[in-house]
Length: 134
Image 1 (cartoon, helix red, strand yellow):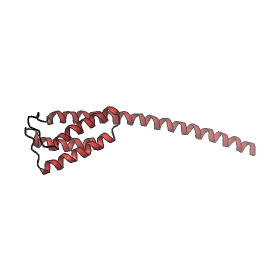
Image 2 (image 1 turned 180 degrees about the horizontal axis):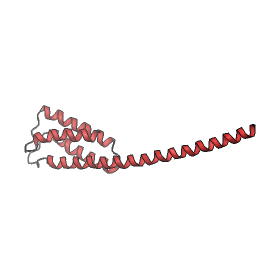
Image 3 (image 1 turned 90 degrees about the vertical axis):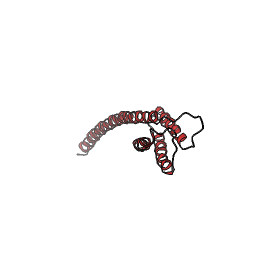
Image 4 (image 1 turned 120 degrees about the vertical axis):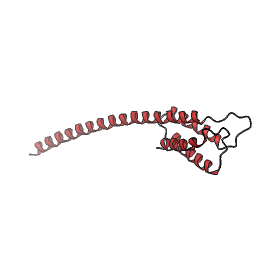
């Protein structure tokens, strides 16, 4: 969920600043950006793959730069590129989530099958024991 929250919060932030080349942030902007950073930390922490964790950390680092005062002669931060990176990350998380869900469904189905076999064996043993007692 953190990835979706991070993306939503970033889009809100970026929509207000996409044309602002100076990126002078006020207190409200810092609060909004901190929400994005917090969600990106959750995203990185709960990533399902090493690649996803690395991407989330890279984006976090790019966003962290925005919290600092802009440096003289520094290239402007490309919010559109960060948005594209976050969008791609959201898509990757969705794909990974589906793959893990399908894998867990397969494990669950196999577990059900093994439980039925165990139950059938228990019933056969029980009927043999009852037959010996009679």
